[in-house]
Amino acid sequence: MKRLLRHPVFTDKRKRFRIPRIVAGIVFSAAPFCIIFRKIDPEKLFTALGAVSWWSLPALLFFSFTAMVLQGTRWWILIRAFTRQLSWLRALSLHFTSSFYSLFIPNSTMQEVLRSVVASKHVGAVVSWSSAWVNKITGVVAAFAFSVAGILFLPAGTLPPKVTGVVGVLFVIMVILLIVSFSKTASRPLRRLASKVIPPSLQSFIAKLHEGIYQFRNKTAHLIVTMGVTFLVQFSIVFAITLLIRGITGRFLLVESLAFIPLIEMISLAQPFTPNGAGVREALVAIMFSRLGLSQEQLGVYIILANMSIFLRLIGAIPVVVDRVRHRK
Picture 1 (cartoon, rainbow, N blue to C red):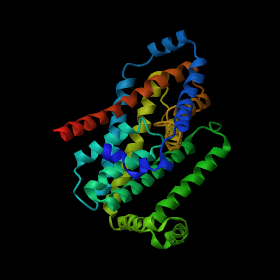
Picture 2 (cartoon, rainbow, N blue to C red):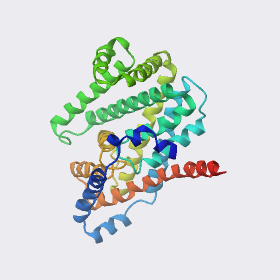
Picture 3 (tube, rainbow, N blue to C red):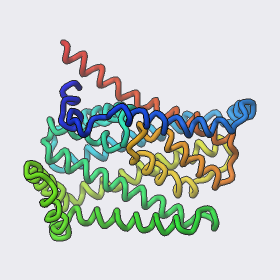
Picture 4 (tube, rainbow, N blue to C red):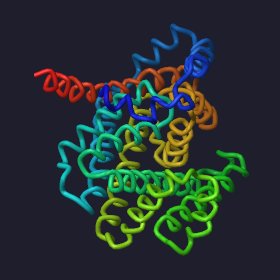
């Protein structure tokens, strides 16, 4: 791990996490929790906790763990399209390890960076990074597809009219990016523009990376399986939240979860301030509960139980400890 942290991504002074950014992360993480729980009566909160169905937390943990395993498997399938140097168990180990470190690193992209840097030692940089890009873009497209489907079936007035249009436009942009990734002709203007901005030392690597992404055009079977697994990942996440809300409120809000949860996850994980989207996710969930007419006490219970799934990421500490023990031996 020490070698990994000496990588230029982390040692470059322009990209280091500076103290002001860390302070901002703490503020952004803590503020929504303080605002939400300040409005909740403690006695009513404990009453609401006592009314939660016993199976809610086990169901949440089961489907959340399933989603994590499927995420690692999806990434491994993409790498498997070009090489068999990385086993499924090793891929899962790297995935859980990067998930563990994502608890301390803002922005989910850094999780992809961590995983890709380590994986490149096994399968090569081009395969590792091109797989990471395809993994990321297919995940975003699937998440938007789920949200669009949910929004179309939402009762009228649940969302402001402009939200549907914005989500639709973003979904089209994601699909275009996916298409451009696999087309040299469509991406040629972007490559010409990038060549004027990107330093020459990086242009060679980017050209190889794009060639690696382009080669996925010949891996139709792997892409189809990847998309299938991606939809299973999204469904596992949405269904976990649906069951949790059912256990707390007694309402089965599958359509509403389809519409809100993928968007909440994308926004909270994309922002560059708080680790693993902490705080930002809770603020967005508060908006969701408000739109659905759920109480503040139910929101408080949801936040407490939903954050229990974070402990699943601690599983990634196991391969970290094992690797250190092996290294010392």
